[in-house]
Image (cartoon, rainbow, N blue to C red; front, side, top):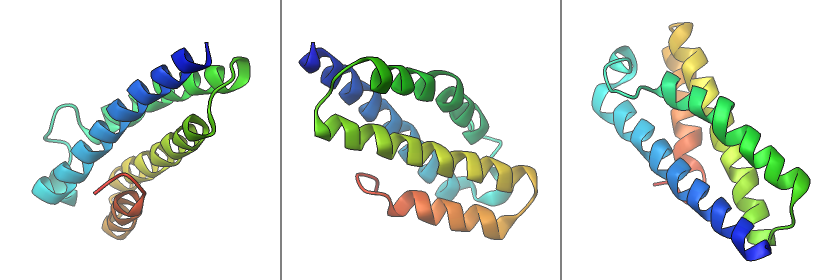
Length: 113
């Protein structure tokens, strides 16, 4: 069972890292003013994290045993979600400095370029 949970965490990890990389590419290509152009945009990705990914991770953490490596991935995914949420808030508040700061924080996270 532990291996199955670790496998599910790995699949989530891979998809989350892909999504975060997509946001970072969008930030580089489109910049602050045009972040609403790509589809899905950062708001949709952050909403997916908040409504699907994080609740699923919370359930896994609460109800199942997993390896320490999976625990680190779960914690990292939650950190990425916080950075994405901060990016969306910066866009909504038209705060270019906060946007750049949070893009830089997301980029500095491990396993992300």
